[in-house]
Length: 473
Image 1 (cartoon, rainbow, N blue to C red):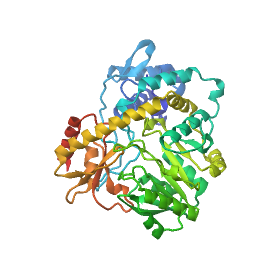
Image 2 (cartoon, one colour):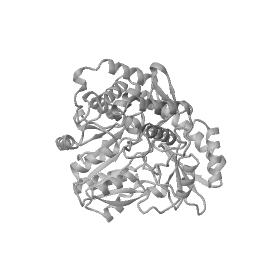
Image 3 (spheres, rainbow, N blue to C red):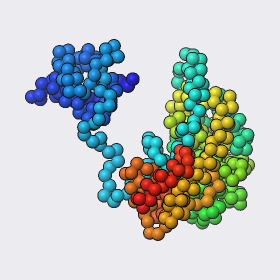
Image 4 (spheres, rainbow, N blue to C red):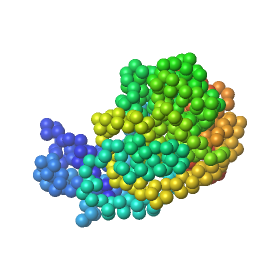
């Protein structure tokens, strides 16, 4: 049961004319009405609150009696006192999103919700929670005092070894565990790379359109982003050379370009590697969902073609397992291991080893590989069902791109419709979507919706949701 923190209650005012018991009553009632204290939350005992606030116990008991009499709280004996279950807030909860006069939703690339079509979420309904719980319980039971000290900033050795073995087989990457650095997510990965290999004023190629948080992170570190166009074969390397031939790095998503889902062609891959070798530049390969290709086997990673030690490979567990795990990893060239160890010691605190141990066990026992295989089959089915359902309802209003893989669909809006305004209306209606123009450097271009399909369980569900979108267009 969740226990409410005393810090959730605003402080008392000793100079106020209102007696203390009434101030306590008002603050609890306000916290309940605003949603800070939720139905079922256990509140502090009268004894604990007496000690915390330095008041007489009778004062606290008077406030609690008044709250109970009005139905705000209920005493449950030894279980303590709780906010009345089923109690509805009497005042609206403040919106987390600031009001906008333009009617256009502010993009969020790490929402904590689970909404239809929400980007970045795997099929949460199909995650093997029972297996995960069993492994978690086993890891907790096996925990020793030596497992409770500060975690290794580079990552749990067993997990690094499992990642190296997995990449060798599935992605064609020949690497040792020492080359692998466990991080807390893509942003942490990019931060380590920037600290280790880049400096203020450097120029970096970014795909346009491309993942917005990348350019935001570089901007905060005063590193200049160079927008390089993307076509049917991925990043146009020749344009990058024309725009910034001496750039220090290029960030690419070769398997499924983010967000257009095209694959970087072999000639472009070779041209990119050649440019990096000739200019002592770095190629950062973001392989966020390379496992999910449906027209053929997953393509080998760009890193597998690297003969000059210029590619850094960034992988993640967020898209394969779940985002809440907050684990990703980076493979660096052998000659850069020492440099990254120094930077990691300076800037990283390490990820919880218990979580890493569970992931390592999940991989060691073969559950990881089996889960990916099941999800690849499931996503192919859900993608087809979602596309069919949406097309049957929105066929005259959108055109759905044909894509070889990935975890989302691209719906091109027909006519002069604003994707950003439509996304704003969808958010208000409880649906999720991202506007393609939010992924471009100048926020202009063709209007399209980015909709995740991994949590859409049937064509009928897609049709129902598509009808809701249709009414908003």
